[in-house]
Image 1 (cartoon, helix red, strand yellow):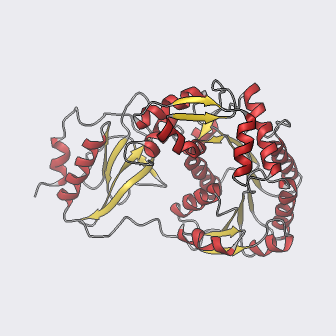
Image 2: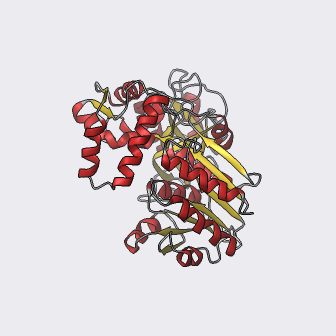
Image 3: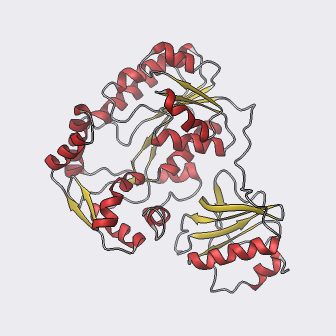
Length: 407
């Protein structure tokens, strides 16, 4: 059987991309243990000036905090190879498995063991899109999580993500929030999206955290909360103001529009070749990968030095909606165009889907703001927190909409 190091030495220059050293977020597509060694195959953030995005990696220490080295390595104990072509990367993954020994059937690489001595972290809104991502990121870092959900039917969902403890209750109830904080050292506060009483819920959370002597309070805010023309942004600013006056040790994260929101139009994009938005197609919006936001949340909760900090979390790009459609076309191999739909049409669809009137009218105000001003942030702080460039739209869409995925 050919040895692992022989495989690496025989690799031809054309097969892999020689790229700068650094770290990239790992989106693991598959992993197993072969000959006692974890082996990974997946996608990562394309390094600057390099088309490489697929990696094959092996070794006990190669994956750290969800990050993978971008540099090529010929270390026998661990290494990573980067490829521009998914087929070549997949073939090399199989070769590495064979070289290391017979894969152990059904055995996958486990998540990091939970550090039972680490501070217990409460995540509110835990069953939502953001809450689920934050829980997974914290668990990957070995941090114990208590998940706070609205209904008991959501408990199994958060348990399956690795939450050590779960609790159900009403965020608007001071008693429920205080009970959820019992024995907790830190809280990641997420309010339900576009909630009409976010300021009131924020006050409940802050008062409960003060009574429970919580040592860290991280608030999930939004990019540009100073914008009064968008009421849900403005409410978050009022919560930030209360935090300033609370005496709590706080950190505030202000994420841009999630790239994941694009996937809500998956069906029309794939079947009709149309990406529909209720504002002009030349509107520019900063985007951010929710996984990058969740990773930043874990960073500020586990590492020192983030007291009283406010971090704007935006990706490197602020594409137009037409440019997003073009990127979708590149990821799917299909023709996709951006199309503006009327606000009235969007309102009818929103009502038919069961969205509340407050949410509908608030989001329409947001659409009007987007149409006139856009929403653009800066990526420097996010890159600093991640220790790497933020995920690009192209990389995100390649992982979500490439042929055979997400269709």
